[in-house]
Image (cartoon, rainbow, N blue to C red; front, side, top):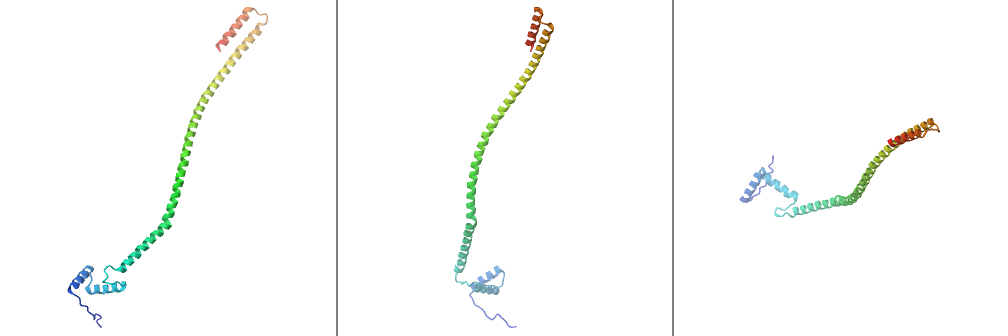
Length: 182
């Protein structure tokens, strides 16, 4: 089998110490770390001398630009219509509040009116009751008066026309007393 490790690289002792620390930190042998570093720089096409890494900066700027454009698109598509709709809803809510205030005032007026009507209905019920009582009393009075009148007529008829003045006087005083007792 042929050895594939045919090349060697010489570097200063300070660099070897740095490489040693990196490999210990990563937990890999130095040879593997060197191979991975070469693959990294080869794959990303980054220049190891460029510490500021302009390519990385460009990628970051592009990423930030994409994120900002995404946010702008979201704002345009979702936030602005939502704010517009919420503004309309706020206007509608204010109008409804005004309508409810008007309805509330109307209901308060109607409540006062219905209280007045209720009071008047109570007074009417009392007056109707009193009128009904008077009507009953009047009916009783008429009935009593009818009895007195019938008694008078019957007594007068039983006496006949040529009756003495004393009998007539007695009959009249009896009718007068009866009327007084009504």
